[in-house]
Length: 180
Image 1 (spheres, helix red, strand yellow):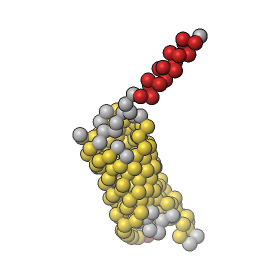
Image 2 (image 1 turned 180 degrees about the horizontal axis):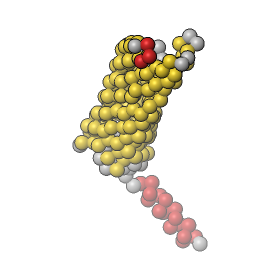
Image 3 (image 1 turned 135 degrees about the vertical axis):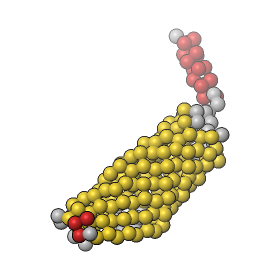
């Protein structure tokens, strides 16, 4: 039994000396599709809409643990009835974020912090009412991605601190391709 134990210990020690799989650094492009939501409570009115959203991703991972990423985010057109009136919203924007990675083998855990330059439209079709607003606010998120060479499959949750809204967020699945 002692030779078997020695063999197991030797294999375990050898496994810890294998080189870690390095992240593919460089420029990357991709896209994500997911569920977005807008929730706000103004006075006694409660608006809560969710719909399909997407984003186009562009970034530069210049270190194994750090990247700069710019995205176009379209949170889709959502609607909800508030006191018998259908209200529609459409929110989109451009984000710029620093993304920190924690590489664990072929998996990266990541967190982002940055800003979104957003544009929002609201409509009440039955009253022929339209309103628009825009601004720049804080954006942040967390996620994980699985790397297969230059291809990465990612899952992510993002939150956008859009003025006059309680919550604007998106949960998405996507892919990126790194160009070395």
